Image 1 (cartoon, rainbow, N blue to C red):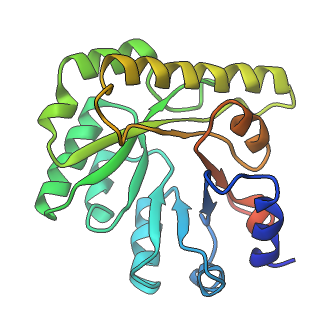
Image 2 (cartoon, rainbow, N blue to C red; image 1 turned 180 degrees about the horizontal axis):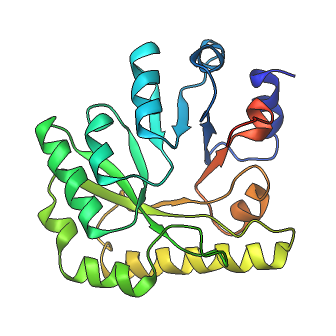
Length: 223
């Protein structure tokens, strides 16, 4: 089946209120264009240079999400057009995004990425680091960055109870941050969690945005 059929099937299990980020990393631009011509607009990439190249090749009204680990020296490559950066994992990165957003006369929406998985290979903040950063007011001094929620990746495991526990943790982090730092911010409402293998658990635990690749585009050789 093609992208449109896969999306239609997926939508039967995902409420319309939850955004689906179609993870297009490693795919050629023509595969994304085909999905675009079918009416889809929200795509996710995890490498800044690849994203910048695709942005040049594809229609300008695509809503690009950056979902991978973002190096500070690569922010400049995507700052002029990126819609949402899911993976802010340090004050330094937040400040760099703000600097590049200012240069481009933009406000860039961001999510704070938390490390919720048991694997050490995943990037992300812990709750103490995030709280310290926000108490220091860095997000308030970064006038061209808008923090609108949180993101996390669960462990790569068949253990659904562990995955559920990790997603519950991320939801708790979101609630704590909302209460302490963003209670007056209507826009702080996003919880980006859930991928092809665990999105149903993520939705049950309060996800507002899922990042789906394999179920839409099929398996890829390069991940």
